[in-house]
Structure formats: C-alpha cells, structure tokens
Image (cartoon, rainbow, N blue to C red; front, side):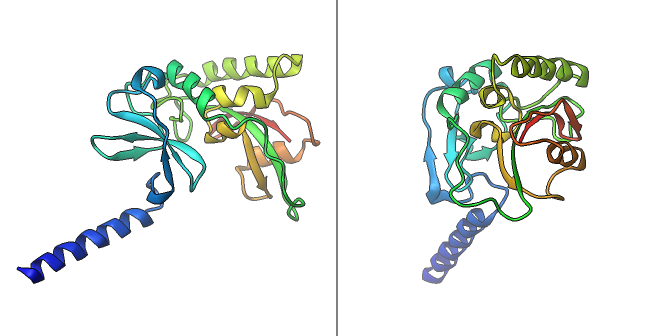
Length: 214
C-alpha cells in the first residue's frame, strides 16, 4: 500500500513538472502569476472566466476557474466592447518603455497597430475569440486610424491599447528591438524604410493590416 502511494505521489509530481515546462500554456510559470480579479459584468467574459496576468511574459491571459483552462484569446461568448474597455483601463502600461542601454547592433525598434480579418493567418486576438470581418472591412477600420494619426488627433500609441489585435497593444504597440529576418518580409521592408518618428501607410502581411511607427 505504501509503495502504491509513493508511485501515485511521484506521478503527480511529474505531471506538475510537465505543466510548468509546457511552453504553450499561458500559466507556464505558476508561481509568477498574479490574478487580476474583477467580475464578469466588468470584463465582459462568460461565466467562470477571468483575466489574469502572466509575470513571465508580462501579458494578460484568460483563465477558467472551474475547468482550470488557460488561453491567450478571449473565450467564445465574450462581450468584445466590455473587454476592450476593461483591458484598456487595467492592462495598458502607459508610455512606450525607455531603453536602459544602447541600441543592439543591427537592431531597430518599432511599434505597430494590427487589424486582423477572417483570412488572417490566425483570425483571433485578445479582443475577439473569432474575427469574422472581411479584409475590406478591416481596411476601412485601419484607414480610419490612419486618418486620426495623420490629423494629429491621436497617436499610434494612443490607439493601439484598445484597437490593435496584437498582444503588443498593452505596451502601446511596442515590439521592442528586432533585426532583419525577424519579421515577415512585407513588415520588415516597410519598417526599415521609415525614418525614426515616421508612421507607415497601411502594410499588408499574412497576419493582417498594420500601421507601423519607427
């Protein structure tokens, strides 16, 4: 009986280690997670779902407290408008981070605003579990954002926290430093053609439609 108990405990321990090491689980570093409360009415999430924050990735994710399931995209049945306002209020980090040291060799820094559509490579985001808009509808949306930026009524960093379909939204669209070969070619060509402080026109990639600021 004692041997059977030891084997059971060993199995549970191994299972726990596998959960922690699984790179595709949002809660992969269980001791680094901080629950981020607030009810269904405020977040717009379905029953039993809540927003949590992963300290290991510094990003919000969605957790079902009954099924113990974690995911990066909001679950089906989410009120997208409520979630958008909640995330802007609680998970927008303010200004673009200032680098502590110099620029890495061959690297540049940029921010972007991404609008996905139903034919995007992955038609879901932190804002919507399933994106059903057409590419033409996405183009209308991003053109509207482009007009606001060009007129000076808003900056890309102002719009990204609530309007971008990329998880970089919580960092005002900031992608950090990257070099050639790190991004999709269309994105890379557009960003390396910009001068510091410039914003691109609409750039089309397999991910969706982008406005890019260097």
